[in-house]
Amino acid sequence: LGLGLAIVRSLAELHGGRVTVESAGPAQGSTFTVSLPLDAGPEAATPASRLPASGESLGDIRVLAVDDDEDAARMIEQMLRFEGATVRIALNGNDAVETARSFRPDVLVLQGGGEGGGDVLRALRLDRELSEVPVVGVGRPEWFDGLRAAGCTVAICGPVGDGALPEAVAEALRAAP
Image (spheres, rainbow, N blue to C red):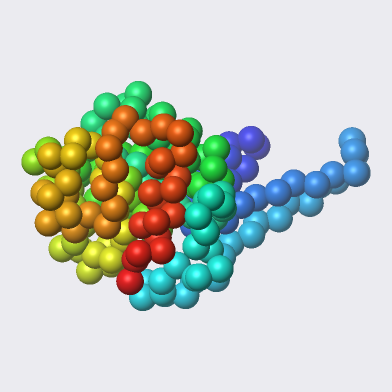
């Protein structure tokens, strides 16, 4: 019984939705509500009403965090969830592209910027449905030129802290076409 609800919840969240449950108490029955956003199609951009202003929470923004270090990826995930974002993580380039295709993030956070980071960006830019996803590159300043050349929207120095990452995500969303 519990497995079915967990599956429904996971599917709803994968589509940017949610599941709520209400009950008046034991033996009173329950009401399950599945809320899903309207699909505006793959061409739709992030509505201006969802774009966070400087210093605001990330609200309903979907973020894919990519880092080959799981602890670092989890740190990014927690930091952005604290700001209200829905976050998925990927631990390598192949997972990043596949997760991006199914999750449809509003923004991608790419930790690191060596050759692997540029490869992930190039793969995303070659995919028609993902080519316009804004990307925040986190790493060393010497990587910034390579990240920007590969299609990075905003680059910041890592490790991240003090609100720099949520602000960079908001900046990337505002700068997106």
